[in-house]
Image (cartoon, rainbow, N blue to C red; front, side):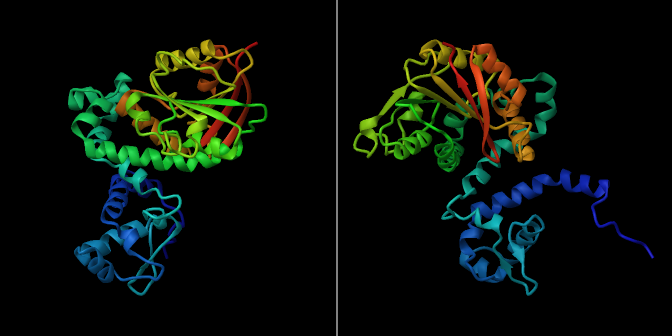
Length: 342
């Protein structure tokens, strides 16, 4: 009698890995079709869901069966499917929805770029110029505007979720002013201003980005009196002084851009000012599969990289910052507390 190993054999596991695109595509299909939104609290058959979604039931059943192998939806044993913790995250109305993150990571350009990873590894450069004849963000905003909108919504969702964690983590005792450098639409800054009613803040990012700043920060918003929206490129200059400089998830460009940004902060800041750098790490993280995948995607689309703890500490030390505590914000982010030398 043959005994079957309870764990996948290496060959079986590798076969599953090389079909990983099927899993990503299945998640994308479910997100685009709205399957998670159509499924309520009670289990439903594929036929019932297909009627709600106006799609074919048999292919939907195949999609659900594939996703249930990964814990996205669950087959109940009577031909019905029920929600799992992961499938609920694909709902638009979920408090921490990952629907737009799932769509962003599987946008059409990603399927063109991933097969060229060997080329990117060989050259150390983005493949986008070879694919589309222009850089990633130029392509996104000129030729793939639907994808750009998905990107904006994905970044908004991600920023809103991490903003609560950052506001809960940072001790702002003695801090009267803060500047969020490359802070996007300003969700993190808004979260800090809401939690600390005596705090004043500045949002610094590119003109097209801050033009869509969080309504709470704009004229007429509840935080506008304590918020300044400053268009600019932190790689060129950081024209503002503050007690605290916040830099979150932007030090993933080429090394020279990272060096210039940190140098500009040190040049602008008063001696003793705090600098908090928040990043995903490709080591010492509970979410290594996620962060290392992001690292490879950055190589493909912009020629950038996520940092290890050592590489980030090296960049900060090189800029002249004094490094203090390193704190875990959540399973995806670490915060590096630094000080500008006296």
